[in-house]
Length: 464
Image (cartoon, rainbow, N blue to C red; front, side, top):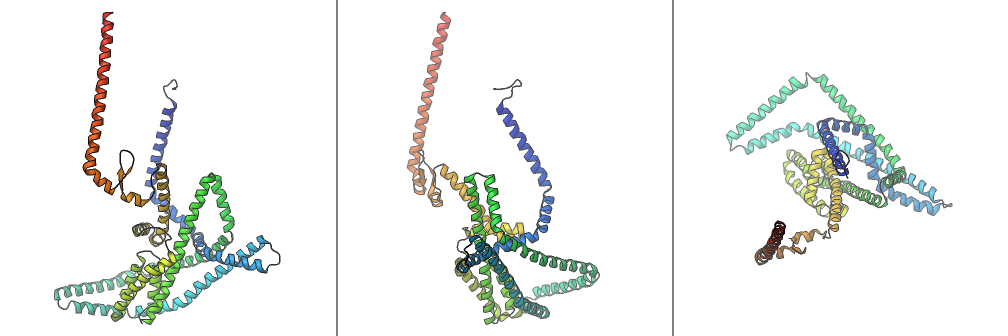
């Protein structure tokens, strides 16, 4: 029922929806124009919270080990405690487990640094000292390879000479006159390195607090969820967070363990094969192996070049070894440790790595896979519920063989769809045309009857 101006509730509702839509469009347009400022503010926020973020990452990675120690110490304290105070035993076991987990983590980091830093330093010093020899070797290989192509050899040598002149000009005209600026940049880099060390130390402290307070934090999170959602939706949200936790912890912890094993195998094997720069190569192979799919390629290319310029005779041996190592990792070690932690096919793994890497760099290449796995699972659940509401099968195999539905709502598989395109299709079209023709005739008869009835009515009116 409308008011005196002719508006009803539906008109008012449509007007409000239209106004709200226009406001959203305007706000979105303004935000698009300020997207640079938004990302800048987000970057400053992340920088300010870097210590907390590092602490959260450390706590998340150490949580499975801490839980293992916690259960172990609960059983020990329960066995040897005279007073069976479960609350006190639980708290004491948690504190002990947290401290031992942090101590073991620090000991592992220190041990790696003590063993790796001298080896890495020696490798870098050796590479720097022999850099001139390596460049001469490369030039000799080029000249030997291009001996039968004098014109191409002349072009290459000319470019090498130009590069040497350009490098000399860069040192004499750019670096030396601007040494004060370079010192400032180096100093800021050193200060940045010091800040990273401080962030890691503070992050360790934050991780201790998070591990000790995780039960309280989880309880507060559940309170918040059930305060916002009803019980059923709250249960769904909790199950969702549980799935996200299992995917991230399974993938990240598994990848780290897998990369450590690959790095150790690489170090042992390269020493036995007497391949140069074994420690440096093992570190590069182990670190880049954390990146799914592209990691082995990213690590193998610079290491192969390093071996080639130092000892060409070992180059082919190293390439064969890397191929065998990556096959061992991809077919044996990786599946045992990781299993099917993400549930993604190779196509979606590649997609998530490329998108994550382009958006967020190195962290995006690592975290892109578990993030997309969670998004993929969410879409799968929504799709399954929508299909179930329509009474349709959720199986992908069902839709691989199904090519539509017939007039009665029955699914058509590939074979029936092929058969339908010939004889059955003609029958269906003929039947449709017959029904349409019958309906047209019925409409025509009804129309004629109405016209005839109207004419009779008009005749009776005229006689009167």
